[in-house]
Image (cartoon, rainbow, N blue to C red):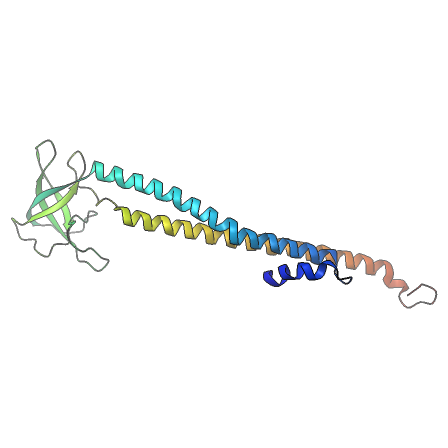
Length: 205
């Protein structure tokens, strides 16, 4: 509908049957189309760029504050853990994580003991696993990597572009709906003025 209305602008300009509201609707459609085709992608690109910059900063910060540490399994632990620690395992949604009690050394040299989770299949006591810790030596989540951050930024940019396009189309429909209501209201007023004399002799109808 939008494309047909836009293409009709040139055809309607010199058409004596063209109503002003038809031209107005066509210009609204043209404006909406330009926003969707030109402005929405630009807004999405800007949002994606800003998001990528912020996420890449977060990636650098996380990698600076967290480090890989070698830990020794003491025993398996019941229950779950929030920390998926094994950085060398291919972690997916279907990966089985095992909670274990492990010992490791903090950056200051003190020995820490705590419950962590690992995707390693070998969790017998004495097994060495690698875990992420923060600057205080506490278990930490695996930091985000740059490709993952970039993917999130791209998805955010695409989402904003689609949202901007959808909002533009919604506004166009709302404006056209209001214009249609006003046109019907003017027709009703005109008919109310002419209707009672319609068909009578000498009324010019």
